[in-house]
Image (cartoon, rainbow, N blue to C red; front, side, top):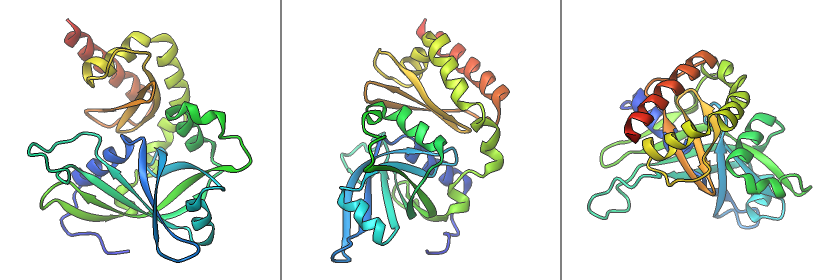
Length: 249
């Protein structure tokens, strides 16, 4: 992998993670097992607490046969928000995350994937399907003209020290909010994020934000400041709920 660009800063690493976190799908590039040529496909994605991409693949798929031979792969994520004002489709942000795509038995990323893609629960248990995590080696971020950097995994991923405490309470926190505070969840999605009205629910939390889903739609709620534990998450959600209610007036 190439060395990190000298221009890399924390805001670019943060922006690259948000693009990856906000995506429901990504373009997967593998090396074809028969020809060795690049092979691109489309896959559903989620992320682990550290922002490492997670996907669910079938052994029947060509890309899965490819990584069985050579685990090297990359995933291209496009910004969910089109910031171009002149119709230039390449003006928006995008991130290519590079590494090795390997099977995972870790239940946490599996749970986060299924919370984001509930329809996948109907076939995730089939013998020919397995969850995979991309073991990140580098990420290439394009944030617009002149804003292009390559960063190592250590810059792109969140360290365990920032994720461990929140990871331990995330599932209970999501269940509590979805069952006991549905009104607030809906206001986050509609008033703060511009989503349509519907049965919104939290699919997951991480130190930098939260993912809300509703019938195939995903909205990323970025926190004004990072949180690291249950107390910080409660404070942040209460603050954002107050903000959403004020906007609802």
